[in-house]
Amino acid sequence: MSLLTQKDLRDLLKFLRELYILCDLEEFPNYVISLTPKIVSSDLTGFSPINYKKLSLLVGSISRSIDHLNVEQVAQQHFCEHPHNAYYLQTGDGKACKISDFWNEDQLHCSEGLYHKFLQPLGLEDQMGLILPTSQLARKKLPGDLEPDMTLSLHRTERSFSERDRLVLNLLRPHIFQAYQNAQALTQMQQELARLERVIEQSNMIILTADGVVDLMSQQAWTLLKQYFQLPHLPSARLPERLHQWVKSQIASLTQTSDIPSPRLPLRLEWQGQQLLIRLITDQPGEQYLLLLEEQTVSSLSSESIELLGLTKREAEVLSWVTLSKSNAEIADILGISELTVKKHLEHIYQKFGVQGRIAAVTYALDKLGVLRA
Image 1 (cartoon, helix red, strand yellow):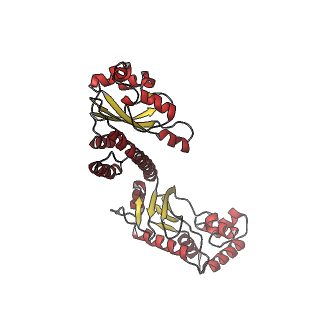
Image 2: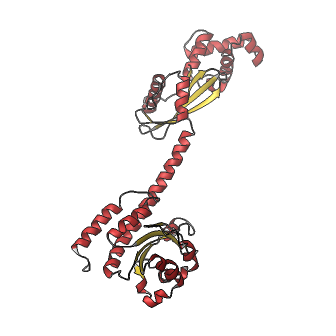
Image 3: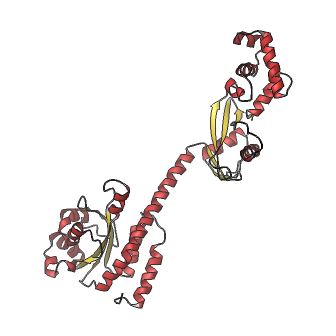
């Protein structure tokens, strides 16, 4: 630390404050090469992926255009010629190294790939670089080399990199590595969020807060609600009032403790020969709720659904045919029983429902099964 001045320390702290500003993997390389020359001067700065398994370097982000040079081709043809690459392959040490650590000036000028095909055409005479072992991080998580390492390289027009520059880069290396991991994590979360948003938009889904307020509604769900509740306008953050009241009653039933709740049946709405089923799904009561909307062709009430109202299987069959306006004689013929038996079943149904008459029984069943007509 004796090589660093008070100004160096202040510049280091400023660099770190700026480095940890959140950005994704697409932004990160350009951000790093814009920051680094502020603390270690460089005439050309690059941040590039380098695959030591395949012995290849890809041109990543660089601080100025070098389109007239085929850097990737040169790097692949002369990869092992670069002394820093050979050193890293042998030792795994990615700390800051400069060309003069390995070659004197004459040796550098004899280099065909690094000097004659890269540095000299750009008027450069020296390079200092460090390596971030991101592929080792990948191996800890997944099999194989699924990600290249990253190299940060600084170039100058003269051989003037100092031990102060090396120390600064080595102090920054773990922070650059951590900031790179932060960018990876942010990018992964952005990708997962984008996938989730696509799934939601392709589904008939509404996400509600703990108190039943709309947190997210897909466009398809919004269209269905507007259609089935016949509303000229529907704010995306609000449910239609009838649906809001139904949701409130369903949520209230989840928290009651005095009685065993009735089955949580979907809400049904009919419109122009179609019906919309709305189901309330919850993970943990009091946290978040999900409404799933499903559009179907209208059919009669099934005996299976009617049976959920506390009727026997035969009573449910009788009432399902009543909903289709069948007479006692027709029901008796369909079920292969006598009219007297049909009448007895209906009397039991009226008694269980607490109603009188066929219309009242059907209305009761429709109401309890959540069938609303728009």
